[in-house]
Length: 477
Ligand code: FAD
Ligand code: MLT
Ligand code: ZN
Image 1 (cartoon, rainbow, N blue to C red):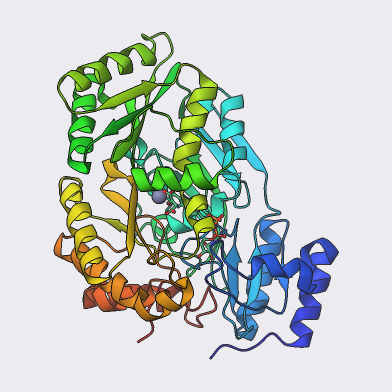
Image 2 (cartoon, helix red, strand yellow; image 1 turned 120 degrees about the vertical axis):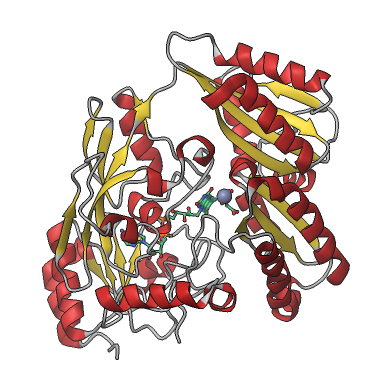
């Protein structure tokens, strides 16, 4: 049974952490008590911001002894309410944001060791300064932290080539629920000592411990990179284009992002300074990024030629290759602003789903038709990581209808329909955002009993008192 923090515990944490590491100020706490989409709102008696692994250990040991829950938090960009505490206020919020140093970057080993609070774009900069690259990026790169990325097994826009966080983490340092330290930072490329605790912690959403630092895989910085925007007729054409580009360019293709016309329209309407990349209208678009190693032929020429061939073959309707870095960034901004443009538009029913890549075009078209037929006026915006078989299949309320009222009545049924289709296609109801609190019910409804039993058994073995991020990821019995 969890307990609320006692005055004595709060006092001991205050003196442990000092004024920079401990606050109960409601104004300071407020932005961290709701999620990015403002769908979840919680309370907490205090915000703890340790500056070192030793302080994290001391916090966890004291909370464990008193059975007080902790909600770890990084940049608070979770799409599933994973870092928002419960409204009962019994849990303490544990921010890792002060632990933000890149401890080392080794170009020889191709490894960076970064603390949990390092912001992704700062990690990109640190790797670039050493002539290397950390090959994972996403729209929230200016806020999302290493600890959050590890704990959600984040994906993003380069999974096609490099995989999600799970394939980029070489080692972890983490404080376990009893306050002990898992010292697994050594970046061995091979280590076969049985169960891999590091892999259990990746994607655990803070339910098994607090990640304090990670050893992360770096790759060579590219010699050149090129970004193109392509207009085409359907998701099937987009997938055919991807396979065509891969045949010509091989592993040079690093990103392949699907954008429907309605998502582009949302961005152009809502995000200042954005412009339509192509002259005409197209039902679907893709953003392609390809790279070339140092000394190789410029990536733009190769991409240009490959796209010209695709246009001739009728796979694409129009294409633009960015002429310079500014144009390339402007194209990426169109893609990366979709989530923000949707948020500005108002609440929607979000789904982050995966199916086998070859099944995705049919999934998008058929699930869209099914939603539109059953929920009159509902608008589907399906975009994202087509090359990974992962789209964000979001459903907006009918135009002119009070969004919250419609969602209160329909969201659950919409989600069931979408997730049932995902199940029929052999897919997953969470491709990259995790379960958090948003998908607990759907995980319980759709997961096979063996998976749920194993999740609960692992949780009970490592966190028997249940102090780590309660109410997230693990459906209660
Ligand atoms: P938080 O939101 O603070 O926390 C996320 C989860 O991790 C919570 O369960 C929290 O308790 C836990 N946690 C955080 N830090 C620690 C720690 N040190 N130890 C243990 N547990 C911890 N996600 C993708 O995968 N791909 C995308 O393309 C993508 N694009 C996004 C675009 C936008 C605009 C936004 C707002 C979000 C996007 N996300 C995406 C979701 C989000 O950015 C990721 O889930 C990210 O990994 C969260 O990092 P964070 O530091 O903000 O973590
Ligand atoms: C993205 O790919 O842009 C994100 O995962 C955010 C979203 O789902 O809206
Ligand atoms: Zn995504």
